[in-house]
Amino acid sequence: MKGRFISIEGTEGAGKSTHIRRLARWIESRGHRVVLVREPGGTKLGEWIRGTLQHDAVAEPITPEAELFLFEAARAQLVRQVIRPVLERGDWVISDRFMDSTTAYQGYGRGFDIDQVLALHRVAVGDTVPDLTILLDLDVAEGFRRLQKRNAAGKLRLDRFEREARRFHETVRRGFKALARRFPERMVVVKAAGTEAEVGGRVEAVVARRLGLDCDKQGKGTGCRSRKQSKA
Ligand SMILES: Nc1ncnc2c1ncn2[C@@H]1O[C@H](COP(=O)(O)OP(=O)(O)OP(=O)(O)O)[C@@H](O)[C@H]1O
Ligand SMILES: [Mg+2]
Image 1 (cartoon, rainbow, N blue to C red):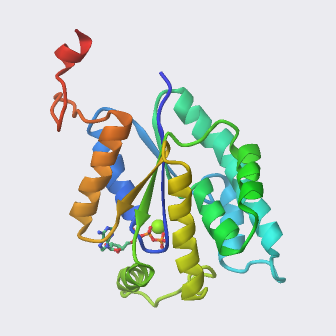
Image 2: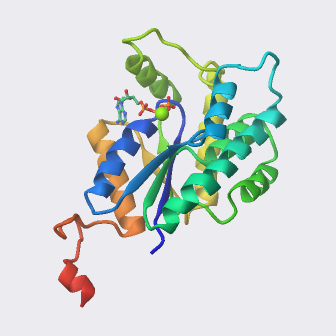
Image 3: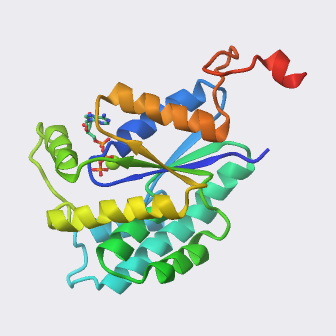
């Protein structure tokens, strides 16, 4: 059986990494193996691209066009080297950001033509499109407050994207929401305000509803039919 592919999207500090860890445990408790990947990254080439993009590692400005292709290059490698083999063996993949981040940041944020960006995704991913994309939607300023708290122990170090003007991030947030309206069969907006447990519950409910994953190993869960019943 083919596995399932979930991507988690959202602006900075919306809680993507936190909820991916929670969701992975929840899916594992339902008897599936879960592989976590992050974008850009997840392969040697991808991690190299990630470091280069986030820390200005080349001694010249990276043009927006080059940046767009670097993201797609990292994604193409990740899809073929990691995601497809995992799905083919029937396991689940959760990706911390995926193609919608490129459309939101490079398309809506930097002003590239949206349909051209979507066409590039098709080259990079082929038919490996997520079965479900959860958009954690949070007020931009609240996201930055969360990041500031998260990083309070160490010295706050904002990477290149986090230093961009607030207006840019507002545009990105609107871009994500526009994508959710355009691809309603794949994307679900989850309100990311509130406690971690509240948001986690919303995320689990969406996964249960969209991917039919509502039973734990004992066959218990909201709206869950027992194994006997579902076999009958
Ligand atoms: N409802 C919530 N859901 C998730 N995280 C929350 C929530 N409320 C507060 N937090 C805190 O906010 C921070 C969210 O950070 P997290 O790394 O999950 O976000 P992120 O979207 O992955 O950020 P980044 O864009 O930097 O990758 C964590 O420190 C977490 O404890
Ligand atoms: Mg994160």
